[in-house]
Length: 305
Image (cartoon, rainbow, N blue to C red; front, side, top):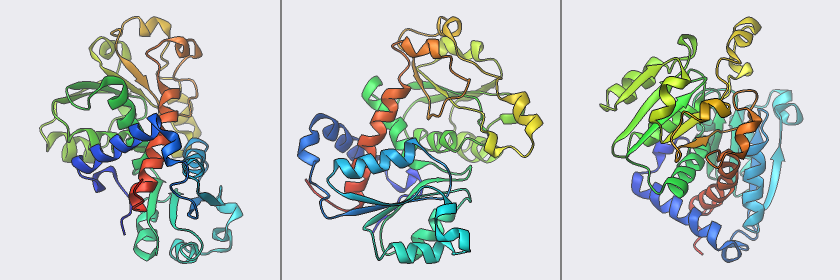
């Protein structure tokens, strides 16, 4: 039995196989429509979510399976003090696979150690968000045709952004990937990512504060929101929240084949006028998230179609 806690739980070869399966699911949805009949997915979301929870549910329903679970800790026995370990032992009696989001880093890992079913980390604090990373990789591969030979700009909250941390760790395994890290001083990538991942792997990167300085050189721009829920005080959040706003004028500085990704939700960091630009692919990205989660469920349940 396998779990998914980090994108690194899959080798590059396994990742390629998973992404190929997702592409086939996109092309031939009918072929997979009954693949998980009789199977149940439990969604244990101790933290608010729209896209991740609903895309997991859509993925399982598209495979002919069923879904059960809760959308907040208030509506679960966690409100009564039940531990994650006990919850997953009980859920293992009801479901075949589980997706868990939790505000505490490492909570899904604890669950996986006590679980009788595969556990998928659907986000744990500011730590990892592996299924978003799989979504990002599929989007880049489908629309760029490759995962190597890319210059990727990561913009916004690079300190608390778990999507950013997971994506960097995943992409450094491909050839000739360079990063431009765009953030204010206070929201720079943590030292453990900078030193243990980028510098240790001899990955080319530079840190800049102005988005305009990076745009002309990018193949991919990955925008992120400044996350209010990760800040300890309101003043710091208010000061940082509108630091970067991507608009039409800034898009004019970028290459014609650059893609704009965003894990969503968007707040103010991408103006709605950018939505009409063919380079803006964040809503396509959300759709790819369903295909990749379908592929992941099939892989972890060892269902062959």
